[in-house]
Image (cartoon, rainbow, N blue to C red; front, side):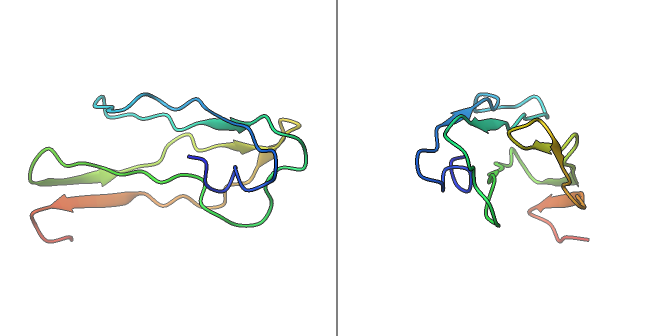
Length: 93
């Protein structure tokens, strides 16, 4: 979780994400940098998710309610979010 957000000197990241392992089908990923301003700028990795299959099959993977904000609680445009598809032990469509 501390990838891009932790890049500025003095960053102090607090992770508010759901505990792992998480098996309810929904996982909250959330963090705040309480370090001094300015925060991270530019491009970088905000989060990485690793999924573990429980068996063969296929299904949709959706990112819902994606939101970013700055230190003044202003919304940051995410751009486009594309839903995905996961296939385990079978060809992808």
